Every structure is written in C-alpha cells, then in structure tokens.
Image 1 (spheres, helix red, strand yellow):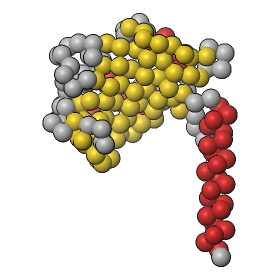
Image 2 (cartoon, rainbow, N blue to C red; image 1 turned 60 degrees about the horizontal axis):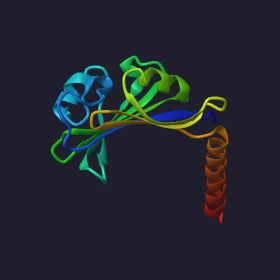
Image 3 (cartoon, rainbow, N blue to C red; image 1 turned 180 degrees about the vertical axis):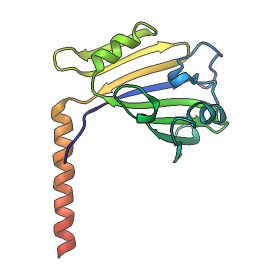
Image 4 (spheres, rainbow, N blue to C red; image 1 turned 30 degrees about the horizontal axis):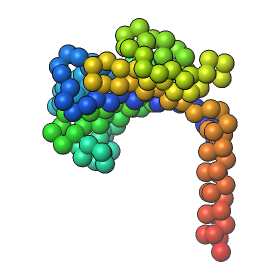
Length: 164
C-alpha cells in the first residue's frame, strides 16, 4: 500500500475580520466569504461534500477533491465555516514541500515564525495577513513511517481478535 506524505496548509481567521485585509485562499477571503459564495466559486469545479460540524466554530465543514482545482500537488480542501456560514478556516492538504510553499507564501504574507528544516524539508511555519494566520505543518518521514506501521499493526491485531 503506497503512503503519500502530505503537508498541511491551514488558514484561520479571527471572527471579527476586516474586509479585504485577510488571506484569500482559492479566491475566498477568510473571515468574510460565506458558504454560498464558496459554493458558487468552487462548486462548478469540484463537488463540495458535507464533513460534519466543526467543534470550535460550531459551523459546517465541507470537503472537496483538490484535483479539480488545477493547483499542482493539492490533494484535498477542507472549508470550515462558523454558525453564521462565514468562512473561518481552510485546510489544504498538499504534497510535502514546506520550503517551496513557505517561499511562495512569504512573498504575499508576513512571516511570524519559521521552523522549517531546510535539510530535512519538514517542520512548521506561521505567516499572517490581517487577522488571518497561515500555518504550514509537515511531519518528519520517520513520524509518517511510524504512524503507518502502528496502523498496520493495529489492523493485524484486530484481524486476530476477530478470528478468535
């Protein structure tokens, strides 16, 4: 079974965001765009699937396959709304390349912290625009390998338990 390493790009906004002052992933301003606007903007390119309710915002979450959005290396998109259906966060799951992502984003957003190991190409970084924060977070290869081994071992244990 082939495992894919991914980096997570997370964009969050404070509830009292000012229009035009926040990050705009996929053309949707965090803290301002509504569910209806997201559906109109992305719904023609990808299917938006309900993913439940976010425990922090109390609003809906919708997921989309990133392949239809024509962004190199984008696997999935998770949009997080608040109770008023205003976009509060965006999680983009992408190929692991935190150095490249950080370099591209640091030209548009102010760096808050950068803990990306340029040799190992993993770590995390935070950038900011207005009231929105952009977080890049990747796991080291050994962490990903360990998680894969642990889940494989758990599946074997469950299979043995079911056989008894």
